[in-house]
Length: 346
Image 1 (tube, helix red, strand yellow):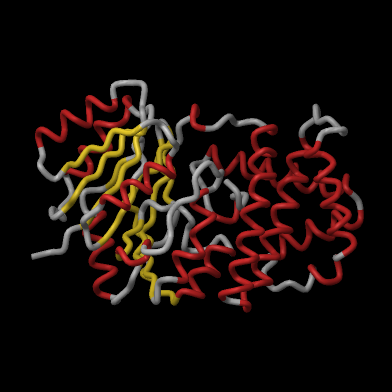
Image 2 (cartoon, rainbow, N blue to C red; image 1 turned 180 degrees about the vertical axis):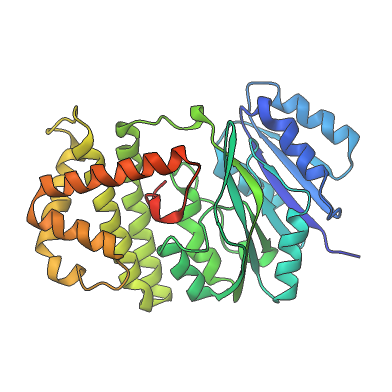
């Protein structure tokens, strides 16, 4: 008898995609599932859809609650779950029929506490894999945290993963926070002795335009909020894995670079705005601490070039960033996407 796996799905305004999401769970080749659908006060027909599915399949448990955000929905799902293992999905995404089997076998075969698989960035007419090479990787907790901090082979997202239940014994998602996934990922990984990654893609991460306003202003708002996450990273690694303090520091300056790019390339930026002032203070910090930060082993050659440009002349950096953005645009048109072309806070 295979152990029970609880799949937790927070649901809000996903009526258009919910059938595909739930159907993909019901189609799993791994069948001993508890499917927890958490209707987070969705104002559309999501609640009725969940109840309809629950009447058809006894593995489905529906929780209706007042709207409180994705963190509250996931936390209620965790508290309710009866499975030995936990997995998460977003309600506008879907999964391959073998994904849970893939994650479970990877976890069991490697005697791990957390297993991960790859995913597709899914657009209207295109699925772009997160990884372009299939391989099987194993990390200890500190190595996995290093992968997170370096935007490597362990992502911060809760989905496309399988967790032993004890990983969430002491940890819950923080409520009313941006980047709630980022805020707890290091704690979760440090509570695991071994983490496996099978880069084969099993999850489809739908890119919904309405889920995020694609604008310079929104990018800067997210970037500013992400500095709170970076402080959590720094404090956590200082306590739990001091070797990775330089990696956390690198994340800080990488996001200074990203924020500065957003401000400089926006022709309509207000020089009196808080984000512009913050970006200019970042320039000063880079220049003041340049000799220290340029020796950080976690910076790529491309990032060091940007740091040198910022130190020499802001317009030089702006020019380099415009070239980089053009390369990203061409890559996107050609259906290419890889970690090296993502901002950390994307």
